[in-house]
Image (cartoon, rainbow, N blue to C red):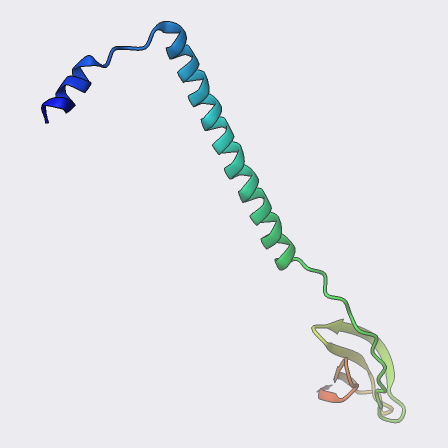
Length: 113
């Protein structure tokens, strides 16, 4: 225990040149560590961004949609794998028909009167 007190008491302040060099090294270390953290976070952000915004490559789809006789299409829309056809039946009533975009199977129909 006495040896530790002697070591602490004998420690002298650094001369000005050595203190200047110590501060310069400390500043360089802080800048290096900071730039490493910024670089790591930039790479992680880019990875997460690319994963969330990855373009979905659409497969080529070939399907046949069977419509009622005399049905005239006025508007079409495609959203979330569903094809929406709005048109008129042969008797003139409006109708909205929903089909699966991948296989052409009907998913529903709405008559508008």
